[in-house]
Structures are given as C-alpha cells and as structure tokens.
Image (cartoon, rainbow, N blue to C red; front, side, top):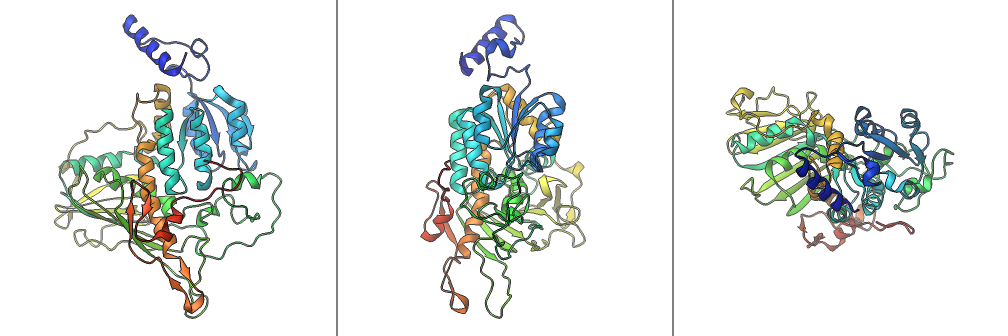
Length: 477
C-alpha cells in the first residue's frame, strides 16, 4: 500500500469510527510513520551543530535515532555514546542504501558544500529532510532542492531556528497592524567572521588523520590536499566549502525582514569588500577565500505585504549600520552586545531586532514604544519557540506531507537562500580581475541585474559562473 493510500485509509477509518484511528507501524509496513509512532531518524554530520540537531530531534526520547553518519570519527564520539544502538557509517550513500525503509527522516548538518548532494539523495528516497543553513552552497542548488522537495512530497525544514521564534511572529503582527507603515530600507549587520578569513590559502601536504575520510569530506568540491586549518570549523571562509559571513548568519538575520515584508527575489545586487595590504599600493588578492569584511546591497520591488521598493544593506566583518535618527543615541540596537542587528525603517516608525528575531522593538518620534501599546498576539506560536524548530519538523514528518505547517520549509527557504547567496555572487564578482599588481583591472565592480526566473545576471556574463559550481568527477546532485 502506498503512502497516499495509507493516508486515505486512515482518514476513512477515522471518520467511520468517529475518532482518530491508530494503526501500528507493523500493520502499515516499513517506511510509513503513523501519527502514534516514533520517527526513525538518521543524523548525517554527528558532531558540533549536528550533535545538537540530532539531540533536539530526538525529542527527549519520543523519536528513534537509528543511524549516525560522519566522515570524521572524532566528531561522532559523543553522539555515538548518546545513541549506542544507532548504526554508524562514514559514507551517507552507503548509510541510506543499507538503512532503506528503516529511516523516515534525515538531518543534514555537514559543511555547506555537501548539503545538496546529501539532501537530494535522501529526498530521492522519499525521506523527509532537515538541512542546516544556508540550505545550499550556491543559487542553482537552492532552486533544485526546492523543486525536488515539492516533487517528492517530503517534509522539509532549514535549520534557521529563529524562524520558529516568538520574536519573528511579534514583528509580523506589529507590521501587519500598520505600526511602522511601509518599509523602504532595511539595515542588517553581523560581527562574523569570527574565524580566519581574508588570509592566504592554507599550505597543503599535511598527513590525513586516520579517523578522517578526507575524500568524503571534500565531497563534490575539487580535490585539494588536506590541511587541519579546514576542519572541523574553519572551512567557512573558503569558497570551495563555505559561504562566509553571509552564509553563516544571513539566514538568521535576514529571516525577520523577509517574513515581515514578504519580499522574495532581488532585482539587483552590488557590494564592496574590505582589502588587506601587506605591500604598498597592492591589495592582497585571494579569490579562493571570502573577504575580511563586506557591504552588500540588495534591491527588491514591492510585495503583496509591503507596497514599496526595499533597499536592504548587509554589513559584516566589524562593519555595522549607521544609527538611525529616529532611535535615541543611547539605545542598543539588535543583540544586547550590539554584535548582530536588524533595522526596518518605515514611513511611520522603525522596528529592530537581534539574532533569531529576538529583542524586537518599535520606535516612533524618537522614543521606544511600550509593548503594551502594540498589537496583541494573533499568530500561533511554535512550542518551545526557536528551541522547538527541530521538533516542529519532527511532528510535521509524523503528520505527513501537507498536513502541518513548518517555519522554514524549502518552498520558503529555497528562494530565501537564493537571495542570501546573491550577496556572495556579488562579492565573488567584485574580486574578478584582469592583470596583476598595480596594473590589475577589477572588472566586476558594478551593480548586477538579476533575472530570477532564469537564474542569470543579465549585464555581466562573468558573474554567472558563481550561480552554479562544477562538481568533482564521481559526484552528482
């Protein structure tokens, strides 16, 4: 019996009995998760963020962690202790093949460059997927992931947990209540990178630790010799593997303005980046790596929710947005330490928040508006707020595709990620040059016009190489 037939059976049986009809897994067959059953989960990427994703999805023992996968045995130690009955693998392909219908859902918490190859294989096998942010490494992958999830009818969630937080919902309610009017400008900043970035590429030739399968870690990216500078965390600053400060924090900090304003596809993008000078007059040129700092401007047209063009400016690497005139100079904006923040400037007022949409505030006439004067809650909250992001996905998986909303499904997260990664496309185009040294000509330092439907920059062809990367031989999407 197929999944759709089983669902029809359950609905009809429930109606006939006049109450919810519970059918055990062994009656319905492997691969089907009745609402009363535990979800069988595979965690791919078992250390660091993967460890917390697995534990949160375990849902205090309400679900089963049946398999763990990691290319680095050292990173999987704690998860293997936590779940000693889970089968352990290094290669996600072998894991998915071996586990078969024993797995209902897959968590992907690996470096950015392997998200798509893993998640696409899981979805092809009709597994529900939770994928860490950013959803993908490049724009084309985000589009393909969105389409595949829709085709396979699987429950999806991107790991930007603030999307499930109360703060984002408060901001939506306040904006929808007309508190700040139409928004024409958004300012966002982060203190990232907090890892080495804007430096020369690490030297090769180091021995590979016995616990690490380096070839599997590289995945679809081109082969480079091992250097311990890449693992387990500092890969973020290199384009082969990471997506820089934008990839790390963009999906957290840009989520509130996207949800509040209903914006989607950028019309154009431009940027500038910080330079490092080790020699007089000639900046360091490191095309393999993300810059030490950047400022990216994305322009959007009016949306159904916000009848105004929107100019969104992103700052990272220690840069931050100027303090708006409508907010007292002594007021801390964003996080309590000011390291990350979001400002929405409207015709009637200003709204701000920090990471994950936390600490939302409204200002009018140079003063902060007391929350008691703002619209009351109307939207349903996620149980546990941002901390319930994983379990929301788990419950949606058990409910079945289309039966329960989640905060960041791929239908939302895919286009959102495309927009975030537009900033990286602009940064990489900004660094394109002809010639060397003082005679170098930087050819991509312009506003780039974006055709979202066809995923193409229309006024600078060289930028399109950053829409879709080439996979290493033996790897496919």
